[in-house]
Length: 191
Image (cartoon, rainbow, N blue to C red; front, side, top):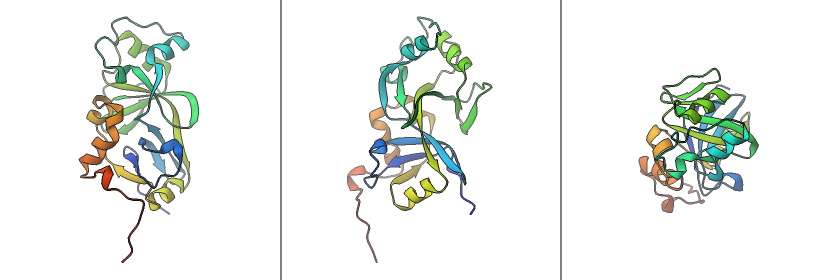
């Protein structure tokens, strides 16, 4: 069966979401097709800073590289329950590396060391987010969760991803579609 790709869209967990890994989460879908889906949770900052990650992989940091950035821009994010030590960098589309994958028109995903080196030098993407781990779904699994009303599908933009406090991302994305979380219910009506 042919599916409509949701790559480059966001998923907002609804009150119907029973999996605690995804409760109240906002997931950016990076890949979605008949064989499965891969996404990154973008509203769960971790205590691990970008400085910590760069030091762990042996990359020196220019002291001015992160000057003036708010804390939510220099922490890492918990991307999902799978492969928690695998790193991903979401960034603006001005930079393309060997490992870069286009997620949307203005958001790219890179996994190579060179993007980290450029960020550490202060010469890389202006807008970026370091994510550790990812969320994955097998064939048809995400579609079933959508049928169960576990997710709301929403568009993504750089403002929400790179300039909105993580704890406000769910509400801001929902508000952009006219949704108030307080009015969501786990009950379904029948006509």
